[in-house]
Structures are given as structure tokens and as C-alpha cells.
Length: 147
Image (cartoon, rainbow, N blue to C red; front, side, top):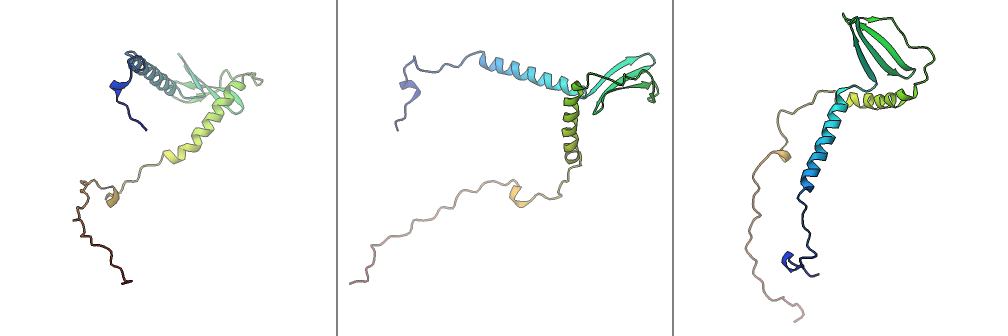
């Protein structure tokens, strides 16, 4: 295997880094982060409409979307229910399945963390010691037992 230095490669075959590649990657990463933050601010399966008399919550349930009116005092009121035959239950199916997956993991992540009072010896930070330097052992010619 022959190693070549970057200077021995002809200029036509050298890779030239693009000036805008880092900027484009940063812009795309920022847009993705912004989209994730905005998607996380609204809970899945819930739409709110605020009214002078209270607010309307449309919840996606396994039976289809349900409308709940909350008064100004936070008590649920029975008014303006959705019709019994709702043809838009397909829109709530993916939300219901996603919420089932989230609720399954909720019990494992919602517990408080248990911290030890003392750190185990294997993870304690300490300076690395250099390897021991042994003197070379004297060598002699092999001894033959045949003679």
C-alpha cells in the first residue's frame, strides 16, 4: 500500500470544500429544530378554540373525535356535541396509536432519577498513569542439554 501526500495529488483530482456547505447544513438543521419545537408545543389529538363563554376542546378518542366545552371556571359543560355518525374518525386513528406508544413509555421515563452518594471506583476521574518502564532482561545464548 502506497501512501500519498495531499501535495502529490494533481490539482484536478483534489477535493475543494464548498464554502456554502456548512451554512446550508446549519440552516437545514435550524429549520428542522424549529419544526420539531413547533410540533411539540401542541399536544397530539387536541384542538382548542377559545370563546367568550369558555373554550372548546376536540379530543381524538378511539370512538372518534369528541367535543368538550370548558367553562371559564374549568368545569366541563354539555353543549354542542358532535353528531353520532362522524365520518372523520380516520384522522384520529394515527393520533390514537401514537398516544398509545407514548403512554407505554411514560411509566419508564417519569420516575425520579436515583443518584448514588458515592461514585463507583471505575468511573472516578483520575489521571492516567504512564505504562511502567521495565529494564530489558539480559539475554544469553540458549543452553542445550544434549551435550
